[in-house]
Length: 271
Image (cartoon, rainbow, N blue to C red; front, top):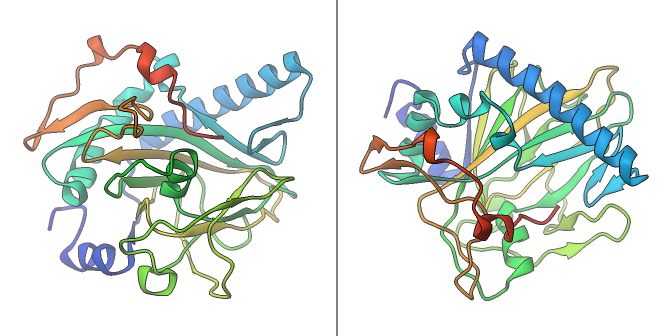
């Protein structure tokens, strides 16, 4: 298929909705991501201190963090998000046109990092606007640490087991955690057990969850989501980012023109 995604991995993605690319993030970029993660982790803790809160949406201080839409605050994150590596991965799955849709840090605190319930990423889109329609977008779950069942890795449910090949299930919000839950079945899912620098690539229709972090070290992930189309609300407003990355199989991203836009700011993913 490509140097990064083999024919068998692409076949697995088409059948199950996911595949795992081991050790594909270069060491220098892994260092960059860890440094940026530390900065934004501290930044968000400071924001919560100012507000006098320990929970913000589905972020729970010290336990579980979802830190979204920060890359434009960084002088260097764009170099990874729009890198040749990510162009090759996203184009292999999405086709000749690719847009950045969302990016966020997903952190699990040591010893007590919370689980995250079964959901589809597209379930968060559909729950906010049931009339909107979109093709599956792509989630790239970048492990900054070795991940396994003990430190809160992600579990992925194959399309056949979850009934998700062409379907977004109804999701219900848990009152305490604010998680949206889209599956109540007994299937455990397939855990991603992989070394740091690996990327789990999965469809936004794929059901997934994550366990608690039972280790004495934080589990860090950088999640980037890309689409083959501009995602919009049913009223035509942008859902989130729609930053051109690849067009007709050519990288067209222009850092100099990549600035916050008013219509993006009004369309933050629920969190």
